[in-house]
Image (cartoon, rainbow, N blue to C red):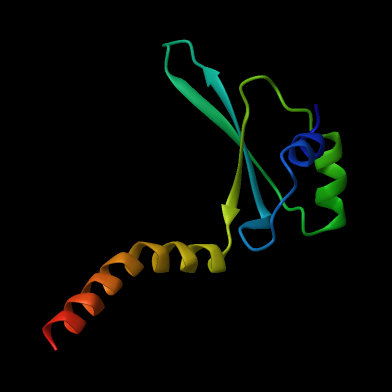
Length: 97
């Protein structure tokens, strides 16, 4: 299966969560001394050449595809982590008024 086929089957890239310029493929290898190493491929799907390359890039059984998150997604994650604390402080403030 090609990288494009795999991404399509997974529902494609969500522009608010994943960077089309940051698609990484990790291809693990077991070395002679039984240590695992990996080849890392980076494909930029924001350019036509990257899309063409991804359509020809054949995934192997243990490949891991990772899509970097956008700045907006990272911001949302920080807000989601802080929101319970902010809400608790606000509620405590309201109770002590």
